[in-house]
Image 1 (cartoon, helix red, strand yellow):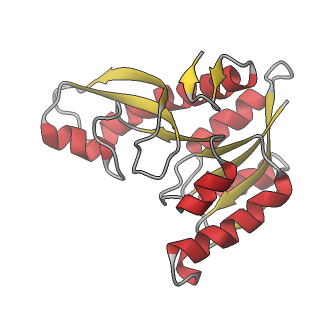
Image 2: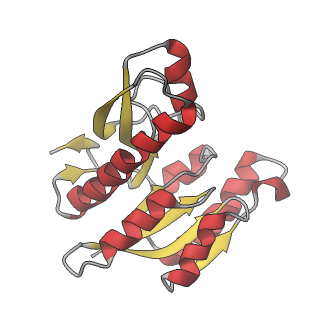
Image 3: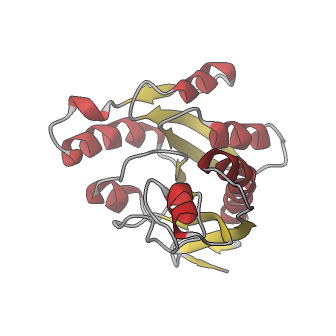
Length: 197
């Protein structure tokens, strides 16, 4: 059974989908703790699913490295098999990636390496592309630059707004995340080599 710590910044919609998947006794993973970098709405899922939560507010620390050290201190006691960044809108400091990697994964609402960064959906629309996508990657020290574990194309439709396009990407992102965690648990993805088996 793969034990996960999930880090969020927002409503936790991907997290909810993952929590629903873990309700199935056959699903080989469970969330042991939920963390956030702010008072995120998604922390309420901890109460709903009886999972401990913690918050390490980014704004309380002078540097990203100090925030990362405090974050690692909160994650460490859970000894997670996998750290899942699920809408965490902060780059993990290199020391945190080094400590918990290569078992750190992230979802992204674009077909990487296209449109990395915080505004993947907006950037795809601005570029005028006819398709974008969703990706799950292993986290490295770059901005959405780690090895790609899973991804899928999604068409950009005439008249799409950032909101409508994102609404179509999210279900795919959730499905890819659930499948990727399953593939890691079953050994179909080897994060040590960070390549699909």
